[in-house]
Image (tube, rainbow, N blue to C red; front, side, top):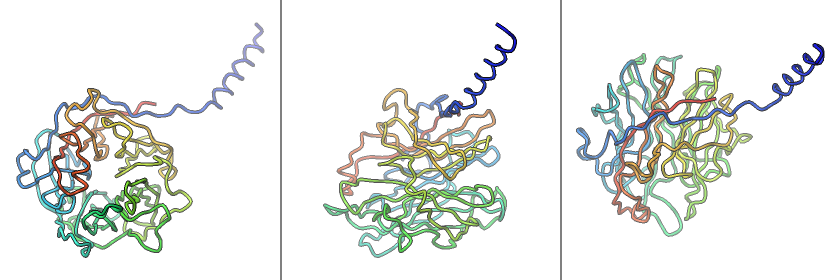
Length: 358
């Protein structure tokens, strides 16, 4: 073969290689801790009748900080506390404080009857932690509507102390940043805004926010959309041209976004694709989100949880892996009893280690 022909073939091969689609990055399991680390039986959990759901874990220095929703009593999903826990080893946890407590009013009158999903986000501009959480009206479900949590509004609270170590609070409410109303989009439903997670993209802030069509039972859709603001305080604007995001067409709840070292963004979320899995989507720019994928965390089916629920974000570790804490049922889910506010289930928190593979 002539040198020119060889060089030409190499050039053609390089051209086709450059035109080939880039490999899709994948989130993979490294190892899973075999048992839950926080349950209703844990020290500090006295009085938390049904356990834990939603929230986020962040690491400051060597300490893990968990912000979560505690289902303290009846009516289930209505009598709630938002709490702060901490740990230095991921295994042994101390309950630090109650941040906010719901009124548990159950006639649909109080817009703060049920409180959910406390998500701490650090604003490096103001050097303060912001705590976003959901407040709902609450009433008994009907045969045609899910009303135990409806008309959700997103509240923003701010830490009194500056700097990363101010994460423990106390937090003062600054007001509602997103709510159902004239600006709501057609895909949003009776549940109102059911989750909200902000993250920085360049000089702006973006957020994934959720809603569910609970005005009709059986519920057909839980979806998320994109919003943005010039600062973490707002004003927040929905992006109708991007919404609903195509991550999941039927069910996605509580996405939490992490920026990767290479500049990409990954969202982890609750999915129904597999009872032993969480969902994730990786975005090149943090604005446009592709269809999601599933990652099985319990490779032995139902290892400690018959159904995994909500990932509490990705915690970056020094070795390049991430710790993902997640909630899960401790018993086989009894959804009819839950919907009738007669629960038999408790919810616990476990964790696994994961990594990104290109």
